[in-house]
Figure (cartoon, one colour):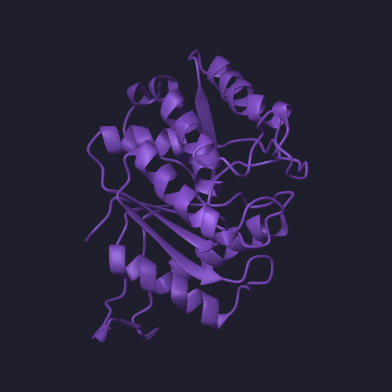
Length: 238
């Protein structure tokens, strides 16, 4: 199956938090969209890998996405080397996306920056015909996405562009809340983590509202890019 957009996350819930509204919007616009999680988030303080597996299915459903895979890399300890790059390349060549979206280029969690560079490097290598991969016994063809974008996570990095998600903030919220084990829940006896506070849960809306305010919309998500953005006309800008 060829996809228009393939979003990668170091952990289940990264994609929902970083670009869930944008993906829901693209699905509504008829784009074929998929998600690949690098790890199962097994080192997370709350819940378990098995719980996160179920939550990831629910999160994708809330966004309208039917294609989601997990590469089962080691949470916290995967590295950007040939072995891991080849696993990502297999996904890129399998789905042949025009656009890849991945983790923030730098962030609080060590896996986010690592995941960002791993996927970015794999996107380039995937276009080299002498890098050989096979999947399910079939030799894969080289494929390089047209662009790689990075969503913004814990740190308030300056975005290179933002996407209006005003009509899809509820889709994003529902997808995030599908991860019931991870976020703030009154009365929970689970340990408190930085993302399990009421403030963090509220920040999903107020950060999106602030980006929306800056473009004259209600809600938006920000992205950084690896090359200059180009438009055919000034009218392409919102």
